[in-house]
Length: 631
Image 1: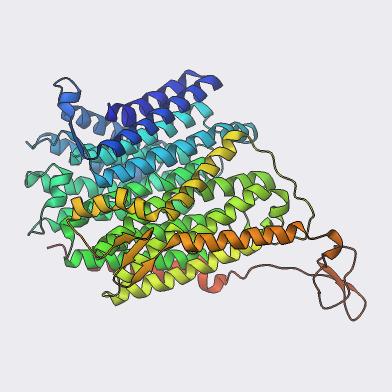
Image 2: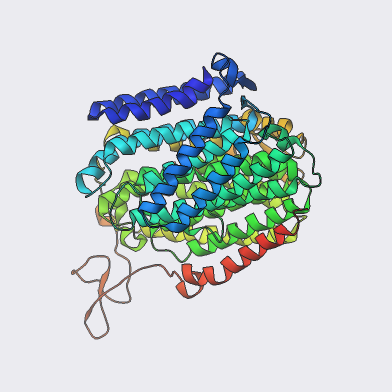
């Protein structure tokens, strides 16, 4: 029943949307959302489950079927590369196909199970809840998008792929057989290509093909790992994760990590994710929050016990921390709002990978908390920024001045989401606090995390200041939005707030089971007084929330008592002029001057090209150093 709700019904709902008609999309999305949420509730209620696939399918062993599906999937990818004249993509697909055909001739055990444990439960919750809210948001958003966009692939294909994507992701995090995981892994890659290329115009198709090509390189590494593990008789992902470090096991582990680094868009592979920004907002929200890149960190966390305490773990920690640092630095130089969100995602994924490499109890707790809070917060940010882009016609941060006056509700939600990324007492900062504490014994990782966190504060502060820049208005014009554009954002914000306030029960219910069951680690992080406690101190979120609430109530009372005549325009080095009240003034020569405000982006230091000049070679050097540990 659980597999049916989480995997099969979303896939079937996606096929249902191909029938045609707007009503089918609403029925399909509604059915898929109900199925996903019900499945997530069952997973959380029943704890650990091991479901034998043959039993579920009446004795049928699905292993050969996955081999056929692999071949069909790779053939489609290869033909896509040929059609788009991306010969490298075709070559990579053929290499994978050759590996799959070889594996079909090698006798191997079949780990024919779907397993629900602490980590897969966390991922099911992220995929099902966040993915469902994004799917609901997509209904009115894509109707308006299709009305104005030219040459798109059509809403039927969009929703078919969107819903299938969610089912495939749940299949990936629940499958125990590594060969099944590989199918879902590559199927999500293909789904992302179809969604990124949806506009079918401008850079959409070339950027989607580039993303597919880069991720196919990771697919080759995954197949290479499968070939090596087949010679060892390994098929179960759970058993592989529980295998202690031994001669020969680190090579396939390294290949799987390499595949995950590419899918997580870590340096120097980050450009495929920034290129994906041409896709509609719901696609970006999915890719960055609950699907695709989250599959990458899931695999790293799943394999972490197998390389824990090895030089490979240290190299992974340094590599992830460096990507966090480089991604945060690049975000400072971006005026494109979606690119800021993209590099923020790259950075936070790197931080999660770094925590998995450090491998202590605190670091693992930080990783799981970051997975949860980043999913909800980043989805909320993409939905808000997409709404702002539709409202003002641009995603340029410098042109968002005054958006508070035009779209006050969306702006407030956006600011709250941005604050949730960087300030206490929100969950993202709790995760970073634990990550910093856990990396004190690895100075290089600590330095990257500290400087990356400082850079994070810079780019979010610049953006917040820009969109809050607005002249005084007695009354705001509340924007009117369809219910399905408002409700998902409000629910995501509620999840961020409730999770941050209730971080103690959240830790006990979702984080502790992962640490205890998968890593057999205890202690260091405890709960008490409604917060978290470590050997370095306490983090109690609710007193800070009470103080913030009191300050906000006081400000509301003060603003409510403010009369229009009490408002004074700012002094601008001269008498204020009437041409543009609040921003124009008379100079000493009695000329009217318009005051302009704006952010410094320091592109000569933090521009994409400038950062790539040093970040890409250094990231590649760390990867090459990691190869030396695969013995």
